[in-house]
Each structure stands twice: as structure tokens, then as C-alpha cells.
Image (cartoon, rainbow, N blue to C red; front, side):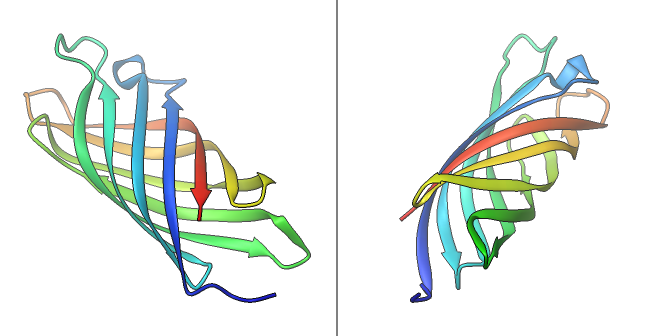
Length: 143
């Protein structure tokens, strides 16, 4: 099978925090590239629902870096490891780490499942900085 050097990516995700209602949901739309079928580089926009903040959800630009570890004997399955950072007018800093599995129900279409992963949010409006855990699903089309 031929190895691809650069593959385009388009992705959306949705995350829910089961433990901290103040940062209850997030969503992201992004685009980027997968280099040598293993390294993902993405730019996107993440929206965070701040719970009690009247202007919720707040959006920010993000940068993502990840590893897509495909299994040679099961090409429809991959290990996903990575992270994302961002910031903007509503956030001094946002960081998230990811570890999960991706399955490909169709060629080039990946469904990512991340049961629990850490998220650090530093709001710029005087809200306390906080660690939380999210459960996230993403859908990525690799072309």
C-alpha cells in the first residue's frame, strides 16, 4: 500500500464535562494536515460554554498537534494522542490533552472517542482558572 506524505484534514468535535458544570460543553471546527500518516497539525476555532457567563459560548482560535497511530493489521483502527492550545479575548489560555481511539467506518472518515481527558481553562474575565475533565467525540475526514 502506498504511503501518503501529506493528507488534508477537516474535523469537528463535541465535548461534555461530566464533573464541572461551569465548563459544561465545548465544540470545535478545524482544518489541517496529516504528515507521513502519523503527525496531525490543525488550526481551528473552539467554542466553550462558560455556564454562568452571559455571553456564552465564547470562541477562540486554537492550534492542535497530535499523533495518529494506525494499526497495521487493522487499518480501520488508530490510537490518537495529542493536545490543543488556544487563547483569545475571553481566555488568557486554554489547553487540552487527548488520548483515545479512532475508528474508520468508511475510508477516510474517522470517528474519535476520548473517554476522559484533562482541560485547563484560564478565563480573562476574573473567573478562577480551572482544571476539568471532558469526554469528547470527533469526526475527521482525511482526504
